[in-house]
Image (cartoon, rainbow, N blue to C red; front, side, top):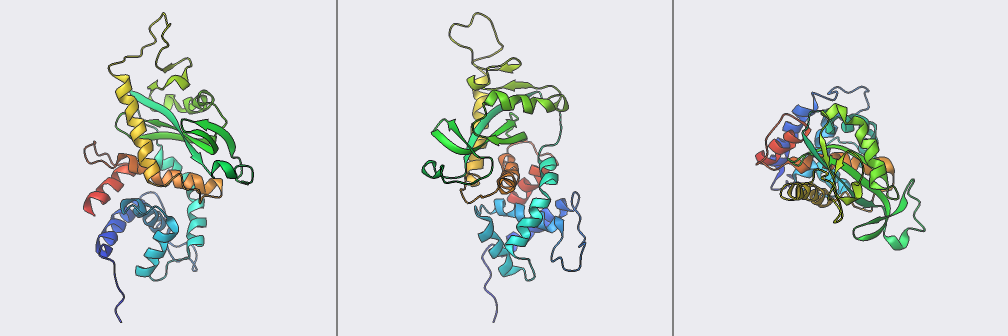
Length: 275
């Protein structure tokens, strides 16, 4: 009997083929051992294609792929191999480039519900505070360009203050050409632009007619990351959480209205348009 194919199977193959061509530039397309069932480049292409078709759960996406592609490894084997490629993926997502301005902010990434925080065994998770209340887990601190692209990000425990993590992000400040860092009142420190207090007697560079509009960009980016299910409580290890954030970061610049550049995110943009 003929196997039933989904209505978007042909489009899915075209998307994976285009992402595979890009992945071969940065990852090996050869099988190192005889027992390997797919190459590193094809594995990265299959993981990225999940965001093009907006499938929030990796295990369900992998089972859908195994229905059409005979010979794929199990989900646990694919996950272990993707964790080994995590450092190379992080380097591709945040390459050093010149920026005139960047927006800095943080978003909470809870690893469990607040009422389960006392019983949670997630390594390194701490109690912190966000705009929606207490959170147990981590926080994602990121630099975002006015075009909506994440150029740098860090995952830190939720109990660390935003200013403390901003010092770590500033270590790569010369690599990005010394951009102006635009933050909110939580980044009230020397070198950053932030909304002044009512009794401020000096000009700190904040412009009410321009900078609040730029601040909305990073809020939109964080909303897109939440839509990609990076806050899913199914994550049980820190590498899994890092991998979820790295794979979801390129979708923040998928809008066709923005300028297309030959980067990690632009290849996802072309794949989404073709699908």
